[in-house]
Length: 136
Image (tube, rainbow, N blue to C red; front, side):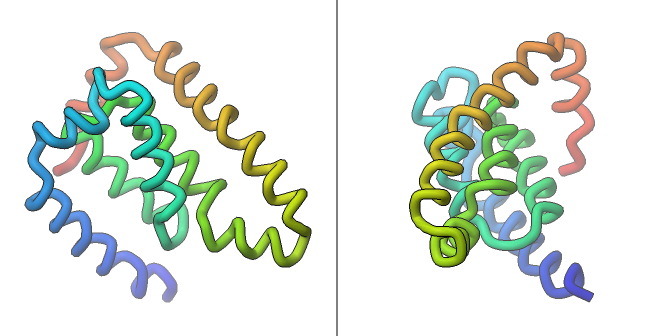
């Protein structure tokens, strides 16, 4: 039942993202040559997102379809799963600010490291297969 309330708004937002954001803009902001800006945008989008983790995968598909760098999309998914703002606020109130800040500061390099290692482990053929099989 939860999926029925989450999925329709996600697909509406995906449609708007697909129409409103030009591919060239996405490539500039999160593409292969985006550098630290792409990492920061991916991290911010994932942290600011609302909804369960399964809602992140259609968004990740649109990001890939629009030309985002593979590691930036992995950072987006990692941030969505571990550093969402409401979750951080809950942790701060229930386990204390020290715990929340420590976990957050450990997660940031962990997410980035995992994303870059995963991208390096995939060869160009495997990455191209992923990009080619995105359902748009």
